[in-house]
Amino acid sequence: MTKLGAPTIACLWLLGSSGLALAAGEHVAVSGPSHVASGHTLKITVSGDASSGRRLAVFRDARTCANRLEDELAHPDATELLEAPISGAFHRKLSVHHSPRGTDHICAYIYHRLYDNALTDARARFKYLVG
Image (cartoon, rainbow, N blue to C red; front, top):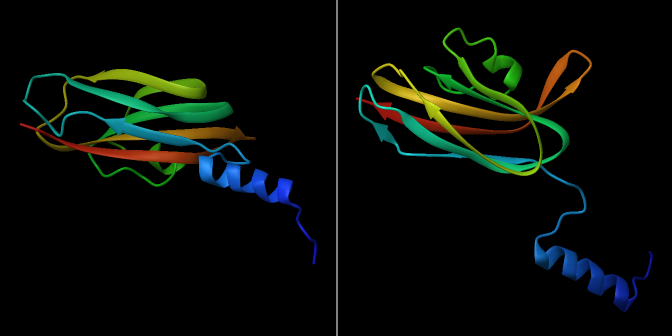
């Protein structure tokens, strides 16, 4: 068993108590009103943190959001609202026009490419009502 000295333990305690991570992680969130009147524009904010080389894809989907970006791309009713490179903290404002009446979803994915595959690193789901 390796014995840890006081400076090492103090350093580990500082890292753990400050919320810092040894490896970078991805996070994405979607916020906006839960209801929008028919014929009006839904204004949402997509924000989070991403490592270098990541991309953000945001969709409007009449169905519930998929767990992976590749599955979302297969949804016939999904409409892409944004696809862009991101790195570090990000904050994007989007407007959604012409949503059908009823329940709709905004699906946000942080992903990276590995060969021909889009690998999902983080996702967020946002449900709202039109009507």
